[in-house]
Image (tube, rainbow, N blue to C red):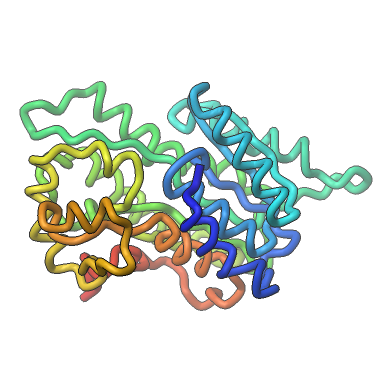
Length: 300
């Protein structure tokens, strides 16, 4: 479940100030049961979006359903929870079919998908000699093939007036060459390549952008090894947004700042960039990898 910080920040971006630019729009978020997905769900709900919340494993069912209830209570938006494996050939299509059956207009049958957030992803750090075909296929199926199949299944239901919004969750790993991320970094580079292609192919339907977070305070960050943090430290130290603020930042991050070189992003900071790209104001931005890393990766 999202922290109070995440919920408060997301709400301040939308509902509390009365600004709900996504009122009545249908948004699909994959990997919505934890981490960045939860933050994005709060942000889009605060902007008025109707949400389809996807999760994969049985262990995530409880948290995703609790999130659905909370969003409906806090923001008064309809939500639908769908279990589907983004790494299986049938998973993405199942999300679209189930959403269509639930949200189609009862009389006209009209169904439109306004926003798609390709957030679901997996990562495993393996140096060259430890990479396996099985791991390669696992990461590429979920991180690359899954988003492609989801867009393919959603294609008949995207708008025809450029009002659609597609945001792909990439990573600085696509460009920074982190040790042990031959496969993961490659999947994110592939996702960025598809982002540019889709921006052209779907030009009359939707804008298509990616965001590239660096380290984010999630359970994945909490589970990183000391060795990985040591290798990442120089990158965090040069990141403008990662400088620790003892009077503001979470106590655990302040305590670990010397070891980590600074702080990772908070979930709501990533969600804020994604939410911005989903609004009408982002119409003139497409085919881009937008910074969501505090300046760890600066565009040339």
